[in-house]
Image (cartoon, rainbow, N blue to C red; front, side, top):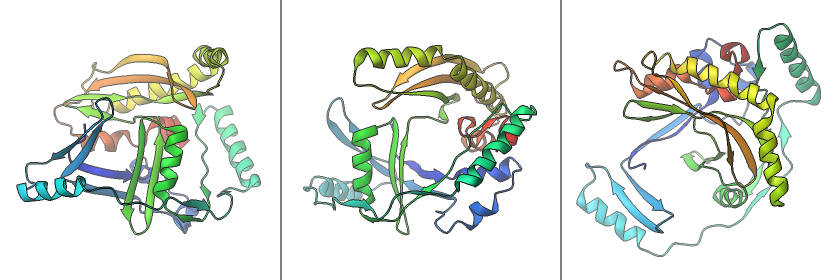
Length: 285
């Protein structure tokens, strides 16, 4: 598990110059944009083992014995009560109007019909003011829709980042690289048979399988920029993974990182993830 290192986020727009794509003026002028990137170095962590119900303090070698003792003393103290309120001041509003969204959608349709693109992820940002503690919002959201890559970060400057992501973009252990894109989703159902039927429908959907396969091919190509030729394999194709609220169609691709490449170069040459862009990546962006 994590036992010290860099934690934070790298914003999607950081991928624009890497792929020779201009950042739209509307994105540059948005008043509430957080910093493009926030990474911080940590030399200790508390790791929770939910199976054994045990918490362990893990420190890097440079952490002194005095600092470890101080951390242990603070961790053993009773938790202080935190604010438990969070409320949106109004409903969410999109950065698209209905007309501009329709125009963008029709523009993408022309790309697809002319053969420039196979799929495009058209995203919009929803905004609303709030009062209260974002940490409370995160805990409520986790209780409803926990996901494997849930995260809460407070980079500073009054900013909080809440992630409820089900998807791993890249992992690197030694020289082993793995990516697991998601394309294809169905809602979960309280009735067990209806729920199983939704999973079967997702697994058999030719539309969702086609979308998933396009991104698998894209990521094989991206990993090929950093991995040993011939080492890239599709380990699992069209696997249904079930979370508390949805079923996902997930594929897993792996490869062996070349000896002359490092983790930063792997990230640079694969960013952003194909499942959030479309295919081909640069044209979709």
